[in-house]
Amino acid sequence: MKSIGVVIPIYNTEKYLAKCVESVLNQNYEALQVVLVDDGSSDDSGEICDDFARRDSRVKVIHQVNKGKIESRYIGAANAKTDYITFVDSDDWIDIHTYEKCREQFYEDPDIIN
Image 1 (cartoon, rainbow, N blue to C red):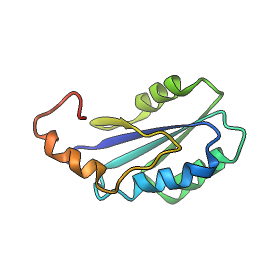
Image 2 (spheres, rainbow, N blue to C red):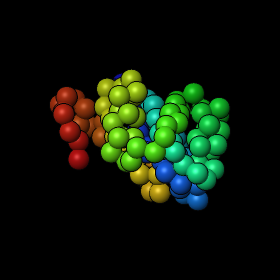
Image 3 (spheres, rainbow, N blue to C red):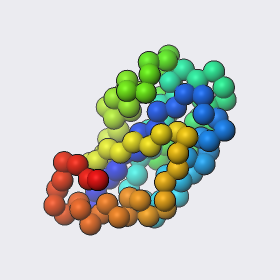
């Protein structure tokens, strides 16, 4: 089974963060690694990230000084040890079948799935 890395750059989104991360962790596609990049948040986002990492071994947390969303995505992708990389914004959430639907395209060994 191909593995998928889900990079979530985070900056002060404590209100939405749990719903976002839970939507990824609850996927019916299990070969996931979730990389949460706390980009210098001044709210409780960093603590929420750490709590998810304590509860689920698929979650990796990176805390950094604020570098912006693009740099956070780059750092998260560089730290994911997976076959594919995806990105989810920390104030969004995804359908439970999102990554299962991607499986059909894995057999073609794509560079990009849309």
